[in-house]
Every structure is written in C-alpha cells, then in structure tokens.
Image (cartoon, rainbow, N blue to C red; front, side, top):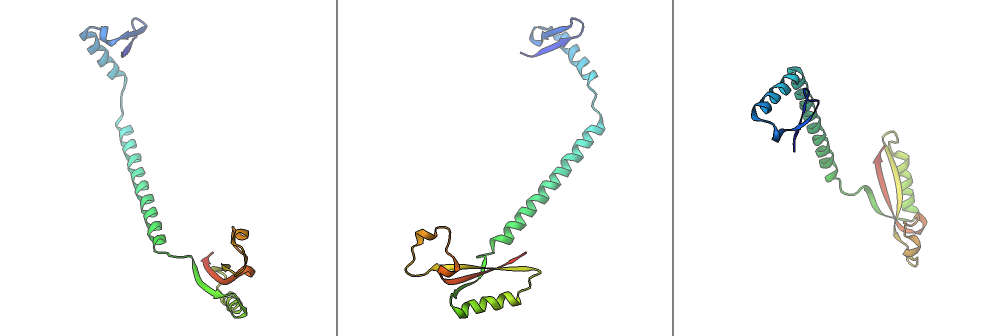
Length: 140
C-alpha cells in the first residue's frame, strides 16, 4: 500500500484510507514543494543527446574495424618456403631489405619433418624440426 507522510500528524498515512479531498490536497501540496526547473530538463536532454552521439560514433568504429579485418584472410604473407639453404637465404634477404621502421618480420616453422612425433610438439615445432617456413609481415 502507498503511504503519504502527513506533516500535521507527523506520521505516515495510507492513501487508501484518506478521504478524496485530503488526497487531492496532499497531491497539490506535494507538487508545490517539488519544483522542476527547465534548465534541469534541458541539461538532461543535452546529456542524452551527447551520449547518443558517442554511442553512434563507437558503433561506427566497431563496424569499421570489423569491415577492415573481415577481408584480411591469413596473417602470413609467404608460406611453403622450403627449409633448406635456399629457403633460409631467401628469408635472410627479406629481413635485410625490410622497412624495419614500419614492419616486423617473423618466421615460423610449417609442417613437421618425417619421422618426428607430433605429440612431442603440441605447442608447435621449432624451425629445425620443420619441412617448410612461413613468413609473417606485420605492422609495428
């Protein structure tokens, strides 16, 4: 049940037990005490508009990031480079001529050599234990 605090009686009174005229007077008195300024409404409106703009900007950033990364494909640039002296020479020359200010180059092993057990390399094999090399070129 809803209660109203009566200042004359200094206690809470249930509204259902009050006569209609008293409920009306209490409502008028309550509304006279609570003054709402137009400034407050305008301030709240401006804040909500700013938040709407921020939400829309963040949604656009998420969409742009998703669109940029959805067409990306694989992260590696070169794959299936034989792990022999010629392949290692090719990777060394790539490292020599790479623009190191903007990019970094990582080399990882690919395909386990014959005769080795994959269970001993559950976190990936070393380059020495790989048949091929895979080269990743990434922005710094």
